[in-house]
Length: 426
Image (cartoon, rainbow, N blue to C red):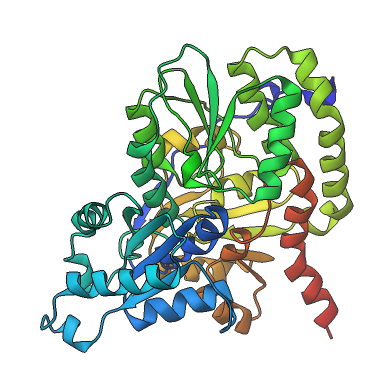
């Protein structure tokens, strides 16, 4: 019974509210989210309206070879477009026609705006509506913003999913259903489906679905559990459709996954005994996998610079399951609606900083000399040059890290830079 004790039974004082800091920012572009979205939504094409820089970013982030056939592209604004001498809407129509000529089987196309000033002026929502009418419903067009000016890179997904919410079918039935919101690798989604099925929770839907033809229904009997902490706007849009949000930590590590599942189980009135029986074996495997590598992280001093919005659940995992010491926990945005359950699990003296004043934060990192700094790759390389060990936060977005079976992999991702440092030590 001890193995499945609820974290609500663990005495811990709620962490204080984050401090706010305003200044220079260094965050990755929201267009990056296209990489995991296009892998997940298998019948959609993502057309970025942007510059050559946008095209190079997507190509580099995806690691797509030149002869590959990806489901994304960039409608590159030329000098005439930027100077206002060309009709950008005509250019979008031309590129869309080229894409559909090359990929006639496409059924869904996202127009994704970026941050060049001429793109910001474009009304892609009206462009999507016009194209929907022009193609007579044969192709569905959606739009969302991937601009990185005011958001961090993970919020591209939030913007995308929020745009899908109005298109979800209305569910007026009296049958409760669970909706898992947030992109998960297919293998992780399948693992969770098996656990939900064994627990007796269902029907279970995922947003985004693997096909936009299978958009999940939503209504007053829909209970939403978030798989990612950066989906605040999507959560509020779903609540606006009548759904209710399940308060839960995020499924990172053995403890986080257990309590994420427990929150869903209690919503569906699953007995504690049955829950313990179903989760006992995968929980034991997860704890064993973490224990194999815990010694490398135990007592290590770790700082987080704001980047992905995964900082709070990752810090909770490192502190409570790996025995690490948290020096500073920076996050780009703190959304109390989506992060309260995580905040309640952090020690009261945890220093949480919302926002960024880059130079000040770097000064504190240099003064503290942490064993590991989790940050964006643009900051990581200079810190490495100064002799500080770092972990790219974006790597955690491209790796399957959720769930019991991935708990050991998550631990190993944080161990890698420390192991590399040991091997290179003179």
